[in-house]
Amino acid sequence: MTLSVCNPSPVKAVTVLAATLLLAACAGGRTTTTESGSGPVVMSPAAYAAYEAYTAKADPLIFALSGDGKHAYFYYCQSVKKDCDEEKYTQLAVDRCTSHGGDRCYIFARRKAVVWRDAGNWKPPAAS
Image (cartoon, rainbow, N blue to C red; front, side, top):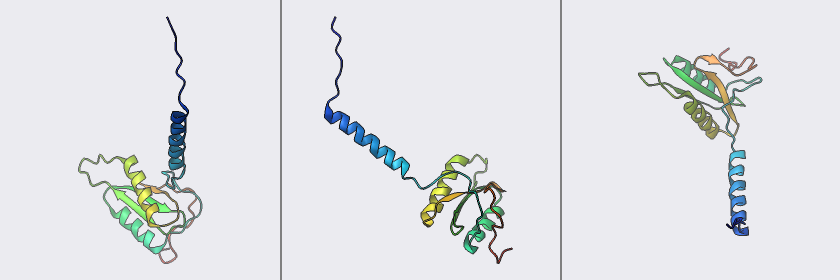
């Protein structure tokens, strides 16, 4: 009986290494997160108007806000069964929020609860 050991060719090794580095670069380059925000933030009047529209919905799901408070995006559940996939819409809200401005977006509210830690007085001066 003969036992043979497979020696990968240098071309295959380079291809695998290149693919691994490409995937790592793509994953590391993401600018979104589904984390809750933290620290003082003040919403722009437009972001606050979006927040008011969000809280007026019968079943608000997720509200994302940029770190500078200028951009926001939200989802609410339109399903009669109320079986919306919160994790799916969490990532979508963060991605859409981030695409509207240069600042990274975080979760500001889940359902009707503000989850942004230590937000301080987050309403714009005209709304306070």
